[in-house]
Image (cartoon, rainbow, N blue to C red; front, side, top):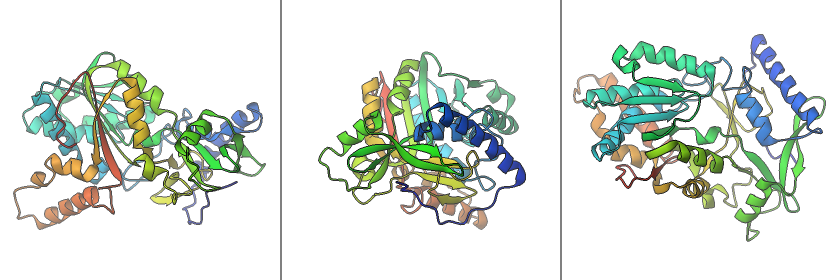
Length: 383
């Protein structure tokens, strides 16, 4: 029943990392044993990423950039944040309150790039709030941002432990949806949800349920029985509660979510037989979530139709969905190139950054931007 196979050579972790991973494995084993010998993959992924002090996002290793496991758009170029700031300016000019709320601020670089550009444009922004569930990442963000911005800016930046109340302004989530734990399903004489068990030596896929919420959702998606036997994919059950909570925390807001993903007809394409689940370890991409628990990122692509449906059900209106390339171009990406053409190395570096952000084979089309609004009807420049 194992549908994910890894044939990729991965670097061997150091002794300290192996000890760290072993502690997390013990915690997962305790959960499996107390749950009758099997847990959902969603629970397994929750442990791997978010177990306090041990999970990938909760522990102390570097995640982002050249020294980490993967690169996000803000790490690629300051131009990404500048384009988001341009979008913010266009919204502020239409009356949106000049507050920004960012989900999961990564290294803190996106926050710095947005604020610097707003300052350069003469925008008197009111506040910047960050919701970061990882205390380790929160400390890293604070250190980085304090080194980069003025005391006046720092006074207007606040970290939250929960969603804000009565928020008015711009909500930004870059690569937030893909980090949500997912359920894995396979078509094996009908749809089955796969769970995780331990065989004495390693974690393994086993049958978990034939009538779970994830299975019922997948039956709806495969209503016409067009997907073949042994077709394996993922279902994200977090969207509905997540958008409901976000909607309740906002009064008047525009939400921009940037992530890699597909519309549903592409996500569950007949040829995508092994789903979209992937893992990142020291810039190697592979499909085995049972290697090095706690030391690697585990992620799945975003189903943007499911996102839009959940957002609408929660009370948001959908402004549109577009590619990252189109969104950035519409928000002045090319105009952000420096006017001084004499520094050829800088020009080459920025040209390469633009290619990475926009080319179809890079981030340009794999990444999408979806825009939502609550109690507003503003024009979104890039959508």
